[in-house]
Image (cartoon, rainbow, N blue to C red; front, side, top):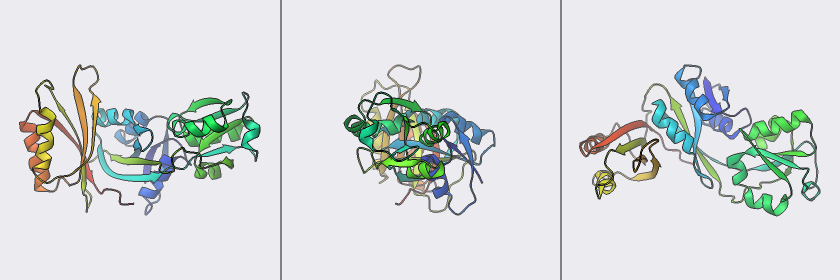
Length: 280
């Protein structure tokens, strides 16, 4: 089974893919950016794609939301991983000895933001360089055999590329989680689905109570909302798209009638898919 991920083996996306499809033999299609993941699924290079959608510290990952609206792929699953980040180098060393201007720390922007306090307290003199992927940062410093470059990534990445863990976990909050969505080209509702993701947008946001009326559509049917996120529509003024997760499946009559009511109220509704909410 081919799964497209943003990043390479040893990344958190790779971990999410292997854990979500733990009962299958997984072949990773490694992609540099999120758009490449969507393209790989669209052109049939991969059956599924794994994309991070939000982090408990960093917040929403906006490029993925935009791609979900643009690409018209479907969400068929999710997984939530606890993220532990480590300082990784070529060989054992003391953190105090590398707090110098000659030291360079490499990692993905989101990972760096999750370690800001630790870096400020321990490696304030070091330079920070953004990379496209945490695991690729480890691979790079190991390939270069540099004793002045270090990466921030997972324990799995250190093992994958034979790096040495210098310190960690170093993320500022131990309760650090990332939610990943699984996307596919063909819509399908798995057995036991209990969550649906939708995008809704409305042409006139100057009318008072527009969003309240829409939310009441779900409340009046006893449908719980587990997520509500607003994003400006590209090229539009005062118009927003609302990304919503509801705790029900589109196989349920209450969900079907709720969508019909939203359309009657003037909302454009894109159903991203129904799937099983991650339980752990």
